[in-house]
Length: 84
Image 1 (tube, rainbow, N blue to C red):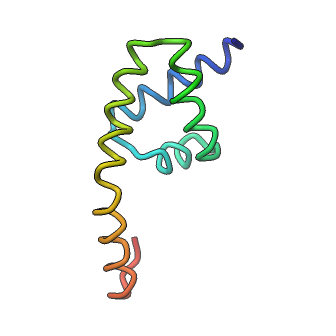
Image 2 (cartoon, rainbow, N blue to C red; image 1 turned 180 degrees about the horizontal axis):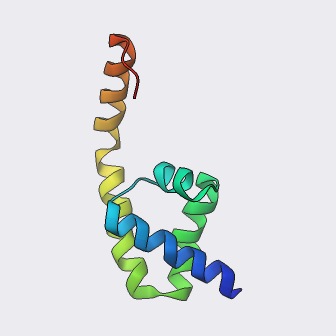
C-alpha cells in the first residue's frame, strides 16, 4: 500500500484517539471527505497498523453508540433557534 495513504490513516487515527472526534469532525479538520476518513480508518489502517486500528475502533464504536444522543441535542438546538 502507498506509504502516503498509510501515513494519513495513522494521522487520522491518532487525532481521533486523542480528541475522541467523530468521523465528520476529523474530515473537517483534515479537509477530506467523510468517506475517505471512514475508508482510511476501517480498511487501510487495519493493514498498516493493527494495534492502532484496535484503539480507533473503540472510538468509532463509542461514537456510534452515542450518535442518537448527539442527533437529539442537535434537533433541540435547531428548534430553539440556537446555532452550533
